Amino acid sequence: MYRIGQGYDIHTLTSGRDLIIGGVKITHEKGLMGHSDADVLIHAIIDALLGALAMSDIGTLFPDTDNKYKNADSTLLLKSVYEKIKEQNFEIVNLDSTIIAQEPKMMPYIPKMREILANVLSIAPQNISIKAKTNEKMDAVGQKLAIEAHSVVLVRKIQSANID
Image (tube, rainbow, N blue to C red; front, side, top):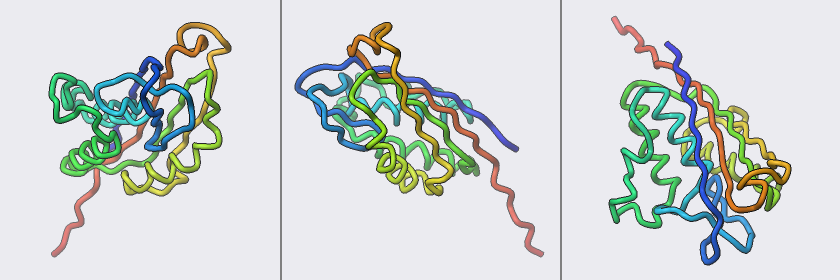
């Protein structure tokens, strides 16, 4: 059995915070506002994984009203969600994501993002696609006020081997 999940996230840019996307600290004068580290890509991936198995969403699992998630490392949140996926006897087939940011340029950071995600999710980097786009100076993203990400994941049920 295969299941597909789709995730989306957006965070505003603000001064005084590190910019962390895909688990990578990116050189930029602003970071993303959020309760955790505000890793917009990983948050979209978390929602895609949770959606694939109809397990609610990131805000339900890691509420911003809970101080234990204050400035949390989103790679650890992703690892926790991946454990829940495995507990349901599913594995990730592939992951396809898009980061939308007017700036900074994401392309130099994508190989490291893929490496980090592959390690956290125990899948080969060639099964992880990350693309970067701008919004051509339109809307909040295009005006450098926010960064957003979209993610789609395909998971499959792991078949138990019959041992006689």
